[in-house]
Length: 192
Image (cartoon, rainbow, N blue to C red; front, side, top):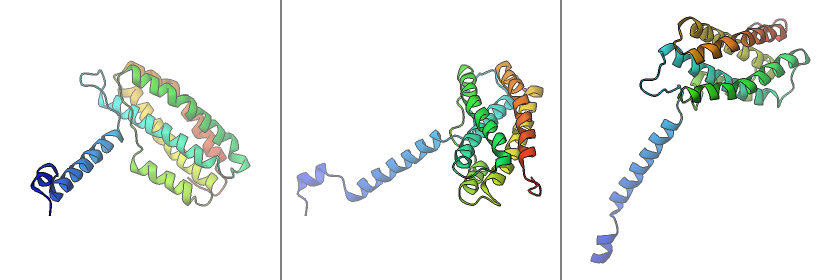
């Protein structure tokens, strides 16, 4: 049985549990805040919805490419696909810091997490590539490049931010070239 002094300075077990629960809830909220899947701009920024969609998609797709490249480079790459894989991986590594720099100049915070569909593709690529690692990588990259091209073209048509429009304009030929390389590298019978 605690003394009166101990009871006065020691929190009751329920109060202690409540504080721990509150601290855990706060930590969870802070962790969620640090894992944004969309780009964020300051209020009053000269950005429209298309600009934010563009920079969000560009960041997500380049980070998906970088993660996918780390998986595919660990496994055997079919010889006919090696040039396309290396080109896509090199371009993603070059494009990522450029996008980060443009976003920083425009005051935009890039996403810090991939959306579920891209995470799901990475898990499949890492653990269950079908029919093999190279083909799954090529299929995923074809899909992501098609999505990126659509978003980048949308930015050119509807974007309000000149820096983001220029970024899209500069990257579009690279995406189109890489898409053609990826499609050409896909083995016969391994449809997209």
